[in-house]
Image (cartoon, rainbow, N blue to C red):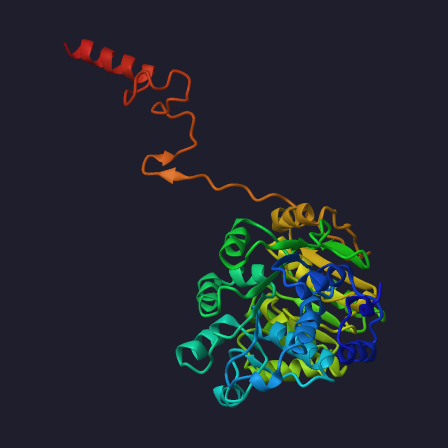
Amino acid sequence: MSFKSFDLNPAILRAIDKCGYTAPTPIQAEAIPKVIDGHDIIASAHTGTGKTAAFVLPVLHMLTKTDHHKKQRGQPSVLILTPTRELANQVTQAIRDYGRNLRVSSVSLVGGMPYGPQLRSLSKPIDIVVATPGRLIDHIENRNIDLSKVNMLILDEADRMLDMGFVEEVNKIADFTPKERQTLLFTATWDGRMASLARNLLNDPQRVAMDSQPTQENIEQRLHIADDVAHKNKLLQHLLDDDDLTQAIIFSATKIGADILARDLKALGHSAAALHGDMKQAARNRTLQNMRRGKLRLLVATDVAARGIDMTSVSHVINFDIPRFAEDYVHRIGRTGRAGANGTAISFALPDDLMHLERIERYTGKQVPRLTIPGLEPTRSLARKKKKRKYNSKGPTSNRNSYNDPKHKGGGRHLNQPPAHRRKQRAATKKTAA
């Protein structure tokens, strides 16, 4: 199958050829015809599967069928919601790449950026708005944008938007759009929250590419057990000496941890930088540009900041801190092995990380191979955390020796009475006294 089989506008096909793409991915092959036919869809699309083109290409094609002179200022025809600024930038860049031969206008409305340029963009006729929920709500409340002409609403990484607490914002935004719109929902996971959102927003949706295998076969996965943070640092230093590691994204659980690790790596002579949500957008953009241009070898990032990073030059992903959620693990390792290339994903696990690791392995359906490095073997093994005993005012609730415990042998028959030997002592004392 080729992109020509979708009967896309010739100008779009020329742009696809220039990007070097020859055949659609499975998610594109299933989603594009359904979108063009006007169906609402629920698409399960993990990172690296080409989901962005799965909705950008049909959107651009459908816009070529409309009369451009009818465009109004601040009234987009297509609204694309994304959870993070980085993902919004990725979608916006895809619109520019695939629509380079078209007269299609788009604007990105994301937090952390000045309002001035966004207001100027909204004062002109626009076709597509790519936005994060929070900033779009600001523009709606200030009457800078009118969503009454939106005929297509797209939720990209909808599960992540819910994880970040945007469910109320998403529903509020949808209320400002026409009910007869076409809605596309892309998600990596499916649960009760997603089902509820789909019922509220979609009309008779079709399911697309519900892939049961969330991880890519072209990514080699490894696990190293570490005793503590110092042991992690030694393992990391050993891995960074590998010449096969061209560029790596190192994931930290916290923003402070990302800053500290990036600082330590630079002190050791590595070209490294941090990327997290506390940085100003201009600084984040500079860091990503330096990474793309090869000025940085190591990017130490948090989960939210790394959303939407699409670089084919990333050979390794290193989970310095193993993620607590399986979906985050899949998104992390998907930063390598892009565009069909091979990648390597390495995770460090502390002894107390067994529960998180088991959750990841259940989700992916695979056990991550455990490896050791000679001279850096762990002295401890993975262990399940012990449950803390609950206490009440009378002591541990799990104490089965308590004579008040009905589950204890004989318990419940003489509640609030002393043990038998105490009763005998009291009886003997009374007899003596008498």
